[in-house]
Structures are given as structure tokens and as C-alpha cells.
Image (cartoon, rainbow, N blue to C red):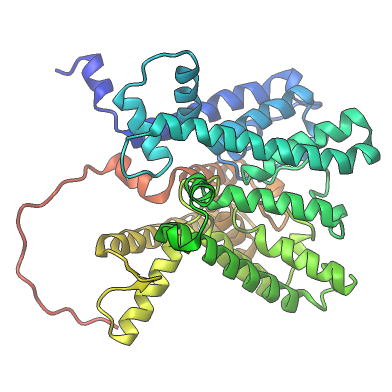
Length: 442
């Protein structure tokens, strides 16, 4: 028989990390269900939905947070966003460090998994740097937004709006206190640029940003950092141009805007699917082609060990490089003078395959439980899986079963598709090989 202590020791880092998110969701659900958290009573399912959305930094909501939640409820949501974006283990290690308590190898390994590092060395220093970096960027955004919003909304409301949206943006949550999200700011360059820079930086990944600060030249950067920075720039430019062309004549989105506002709105709507979830145009009024293109962006997502989800940009780049290499007859894909290992390629293929299976499976489930067209349902599932938070407007119309299904998708998207399988399947290393045989493909 196993003792209680031995069973605890057998918990893998992935189990602890997934459990910490689940714990946050449970606590958040109970807090949001309290009478002091909402202006009007909400159901347990709605409380669970918003708590899950906040913890997984998704941004989907079954009600307007600004009018439904009280100040207490909004603060609860904000704490869920901040803790969910960074991870409980990072805060736990930081607290132990502040209390000058010894941080064991187990906690270092938990942080290692949370931040996607290859070794457990230097984790405490990295955690402290991450927290300083996060609060510094959020603080700077609060100051800049306050200078813009305080003259319009007054000291209290202007400052509070700035704090809420800065934290929501950096953590790629997409929650807003305005009833139309950010539609009223479609032509406001200050709001668009500040918030987009926040969620783009948050989506790059803490380790990437740290390396950019420490190593000043492009040549010094690791291959991962080069791929993230260059890939982000290229993808954002392509997304902006594509949406500008697709929505140019749509009177329900940017069709009636000036050229300047069209470019600004196309830019914001092009970068926000990288798991941010804010919107400056009505997502539900976009062309079907734009929705499909946005789904691709949401599926790709942001960077590893960031506040973003999706299959991750580097995963997408690796698969593209491998496909190009195969067509050209190159044995190993390479970029910037560096080859990519076979195990990285296999992992990328596994992540993409598992992710597509999960998405199609839950779309199928929703077609059984909801009387809604397939495209909006598919958009909702991909948005949930990428923890983006964009919606065509069907979230509140989902049945209780449908809402629970979306909660499950958001949770899987935040912890990662492969983590789900690692939690239930025991990994093993084979000490033997079977003989090869011919398999015809393509």
C-alpha cells in the first residue's frame, strides 16, 4: 500500500500545475457566486464559466462584467486573470523567496514546467525577474492609460479602468468593463497601441522578452527567440493586410471608416486573435472569410511559457519548415543557420494533431447540444481552445451543457493539449525496436 506521503510524491509537475488551475477555478466560482460579487443573482454554471474564463485568461463571458459584477466581483475576476496568466506556482515560489524560506527541487521543477525551461537551475532568480517584468509593464500601461482616461472618466473611474484593462491585456485575457468591449475606441490610437503592445509582449513569452533585454543583438538570440520575434512580426503584418482587404467594404465593421481608422481597426483585429480577445469591431458582423482566417490565427496562438495559448507560433513555424524541407528534399529543417531536432518536429506534429482532434470533437459535441449554426460554434470552440475570448455573440445563448463544454475546452487550452494526455497516459521508454516496413502515404 502507498502512504499518503508517497502518493503525494508521485504527483507529476504537470498534475500539480493542472491542479493549481483547477483550484483557482473552484475558488473563483464560489467567490463569484457570493451575493456581494454581482448586482443580480447568477447561476452556478455562469459563475463557473466566468471563473474558468478568467483563470484560463480567455475572456469569454456569459454576461457583461462591467454591469453585472460589483467592485468585489471585478476584483475577484482581476485576481483570477493575474494568477491564471502567471500561474500559481510562480506566485508560490516568489512568496517563499520573500519569506526567505528554502525552495526545494520539487518547487523548482514545477516552475521549470510552468515556464517551459529545460533545466531547474536558476528558477528562483527567473521567477523574481518575471514578476518584476510583469508588474513594471503593467504599471507603465496603467500610467499611460490613466493619462488618457482620467480626463474623460475622472480620477477614480479613469484610474480603475486603466488598472483593469492593463492587467487584462498583458495576461491576454480580453475582459473589458465597457459593454461593447473596445468598439468605441476603434479610432483611438492611444488605446489601440497601448493595449495591443501589452498583449503582444505578454504573448511573446517571459523567457523571450528576458533574452531580448539581456542580449542586445539579433545574432546573440537563441533560435526560439528569433522565431518568435520574426514570426510575430510577419504574422501580424499578414493578418492586418488580410483583414483590411476582407473587411474593406463591410459596412457593419470598417466599411464606413476613414482609411486611417480602417488600418487601425484592421491592425487591432489582426493581432488580437493571438489570444488577446479584445475587439474594436463587432466580431459577429465580420465576413465569413474573415472569421475563418481569424480561427486560423486563434489556432496558432502565441508563444511558449507566455500568457497566450493555441498550438504556439513556434510549433506552427516548425511544421511549415518541415513541410518545405520535405518538398525540397532537405533531410532536416533549418532556420537562421540552425537545424531543428527530429524530436521537436515530432512534438510539434503531436501538438497540432491532438489539438485538431480536441477541437473537432468538441465542435461535434456542441452540434448535438446547441441549436446554432456550425460556423459560430466552431469559432467559439477554437476561441476557447486558444483562450482568445473572441465570439460571434453566441456565448450567452449556449445551454448549460454547452457552457460546461466550453469550460472544459478553455481548461484544456490553458494547460496544453499534450498535458491532458500526459495526465492520464504513463510515458515509457522502449528498449527495443521493431523491424521497418514500407508504408505508402500521400
